[in-house]
Amino acid sequence: MTEVWFVAVAVLGALIVLTLVRLLIGPTAPDRVVALDTVNTLTVASMIVLSVAYEQTVFVDVAIVYALLSFVGTLYIAKYLGGEISA
Amino acid sequence: MIADTIIMVCLGIGLLFNALGVLGILRFPDVYTRLHAETKTTTFGTIFISLAVIVYGAARVMEGETGTYLTLSVHTFVALLALAFTNATGAHAIARAAHRSGQVPKPAVVDRLQEVRE
Amino acid sequence: MIAFLVTALFAYLVYLVLTAGSGTIGLWSQAELIAGGGISLVVAAISRKFFCRTGEYRMANPLRWVLLVAYAAVPFFIEMARANIDVAYRVITGKIRPGIVKLSTGLETDLGVLLLANSITLTPGTLTVGVDEETNDLYVHMINIGMGTETKESFEPDDVFALFQFPEWIRRIAE
Image (cartoon, rainbow over all chains, first blue to last red; front, top):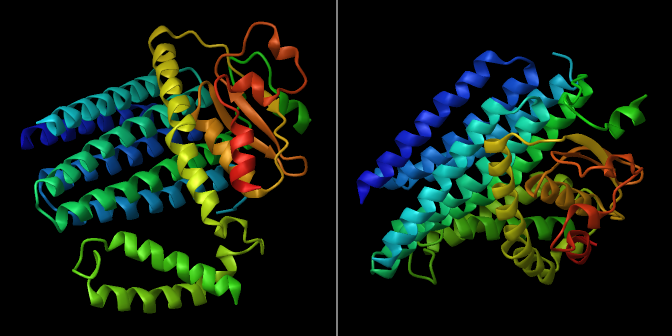
């Protein structure tokens, strides 16, 4: 049963690498933010699956905090791109 | 045994929709359509992956192992709620920022927001 | 004072959910129950002004939370599944006809508009781009506008949601 979880993590890792292609080629800043947001979501999913694979419940707590903090990061970048905060 | 089947199905659905979302991000022509693919499919896929984990924890609790597996299920559920709420709001923020920074939806048949701005 | 109590109670509930399974009094240990009480009082003292900013206590009614859970579990989940199949179809075939339209909602509170905007973002073919803060109208990016409908000045919710009356549900939850 444990192998299933590792396979899932491997697939999620491959998807993150594919999303990084969009992060690299752009072409505009909002496109990159969309890709970054996807990477964040997939990272949360991988953390949840890894917590089962390694039987470490603490990983899920990290995932909760990561989800909330990445949301704040996304909001901040979005505000900056919209011209409401000057760097 | 039934729990194992449910876990496999949930994980399969979750990974499939995550993969479709990533494919959409690579394929669609402009930032708004990419956001469509990103928000809907990755949220749905991650919800199903979390459901698989919740079912796994619940099945272990049913077998009589308490403590950490109950915590696992409950915390995964909290993570799921956090993700479902923040993802939609984050997408809204990105879309608003993209429009404010002058990204025109292209191709598009109509743009009422641009008409209001002008 | 009411703001302080509501915030403290909410913080305590969240703490209890996060520490479930730690001991034998119900599901919790004595230490967690006491520590949670102390921490939630400190949190309430700091954050009551943000948490109860509008000065309305509608959402303190548990019935509204039950409705919210029912809404998320049945109509919203079905619409979300439809949305994903729809997006999957468009990712594979590439058939899109996008544009931004105006959607008049008729909702009044900020929370109602937030819930509807988030619901719209996760349901078929639509994505919220902007909010008109005076009239609470939403600007919605649709991935596939029906032929001929793009000339309409503003859309009604019925044009967007095929199976369920989302604004009705949200009015019952948040207003």
